Image (cartoon, rainbow, N blue to C red; front, side, top):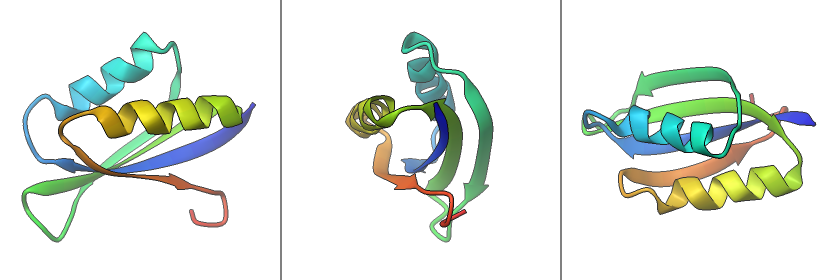
Length: 82
């Protein structure tokens, strides 16, 4: 299983990070690295989450994360992007 990173642009509200990490726990995926930073827009934040999985896990997490209400954008980063 390879390490992959997902970058999320989310609405900056209480509980958003909890819902996202809860999704990972529900799917039984371990988070290897998690970073959160402000964006230029104070109403949005950028979250990067690294985890391990194959192509099926990557596409599953991309689909499920994009369904969350407070998630505005989901991007799969490859190793050369980081």
